[in-house]
Length: 483
Image (cartoon, rainbow, N blue to C red; front, side, top):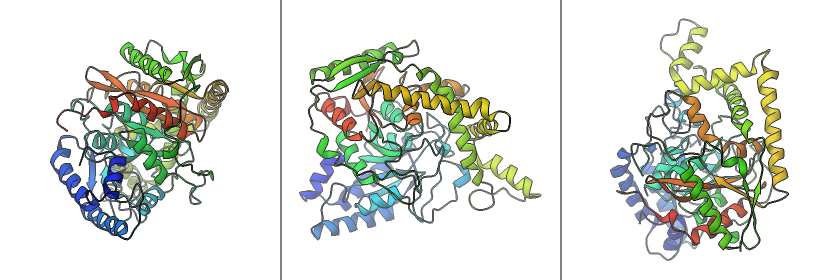
């Protein structure tokens, strides 16, 4: 059962080959047996899961249907879940139980999904390795000495190890696509505003976006269908009709114009990954796509701009964690200032503190114009580059990451080296574009992903291209040894 995709589970439940309760029990047992090797979960919700599974079976018995009805998933632990710990991977929120469900959680629950638990993540989604979590690092199931990527590494590792078929995740600078690439999954960052951020604990509000992590594009289409849609509770949510993503999967790629930016193939890219990217281009050409070289001239400025904007927004968002209203509070404070200082100093980890300080500095009087304002101007230039490119092509293709997954601890002493791993993914967040990573091969036994970018609200086009690619390749079917 654990090898089934979301689509296969939906068919099996509809054909009464097994019940949601039976499937849920199998997966909960599998998590209990195997997750100690990976540390992909922060909290398991067995009682809730079995209750939701029984309710889903009852709904099916009463004639209801739906691709997600009875499907087991997990939520990244920054989506608020009523009455369940929502920790954001931080000591600061270790004792926090959310008083309400995030919109994504509520929508998926209404569709009939079964929540197996909350997955591990970089603290407050800050990281590219899933090593900054208060609950310890997550291991990559393809090689447990390597990172699974971050910040959604718990969701990625759990799905890759076949502990569950799919999971929710979030992407601020590549945190869905990079772990997908490192663990041989398909991961989709939707257009900014396509998926509600209400109840999703914020890192950088203008960049954060929730999305699906699964083994196939078909499964991502199913899960995104349940997540997407306008939400009046979220002021950045876009009131745009949600298409049937599954219906567009089988469209022909004949004549599809795919742009390959020349800037992607610089000295920083592992040549073995470059070769796999070129192989995927050839595969899409066989399916009728037309390839064109394009240019994204301001890409070189994206990383410094991102690492001013994101920490600036983080420093503002995380100011609410002060030891007064909720979350961690230091013991025996001498006065209010001591309460603030020690609660934040003890509750936040090193990476979060680093980004708060960088952000506060960038926003301070005398430096705002020099750093934050200039970064926002670069952000506009990055967006303009994409708009010009999409006048010539329908899709942009390139590597998801410059290197395969690195060893645990290898970049801990050099945060900038870790930041540089986001070079291909952050531009989509700066511009608000949808992006998808799909499996494209292996380097030294570690998975490699290829990234697709599309114009706003063209998630269906990304899923269509990825699905057609997956019908003609088998990278996405490979399973890590032992799982």
